[in-house]
Image (cartoon, rainbow, N blue to C red):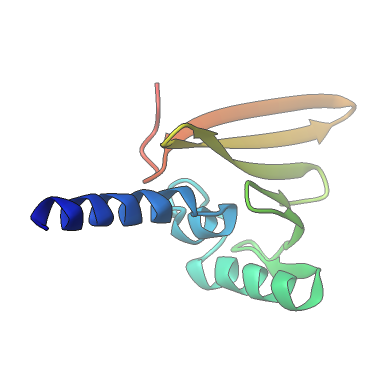
Length: 125
């Protein structure tokens, strides 16, 4: 009986980990990773997008941030007229990692920075 309970708890915790979506990770994204948005702004973006299919908030500098896409495994923000931020949930078996891509295009030149994190926002490699 005790073994059955342990197995059930393990499976339940595994299911909750694998069920996490891009929106869940966006909510827990630390300010150090995304200093342009306050916690309430992130929650507002998610709420507005769920209700209307479009979402806009002002960042800490007063510029508009637009949520362009939200799926279970991806979130895309237009963070300015020249930049975007993409958050991807990468699933590999029972492991989850996060890939964040910042893209800036200016004067016809595109600069892309890709960072990888664990599911609890610790930098990888």
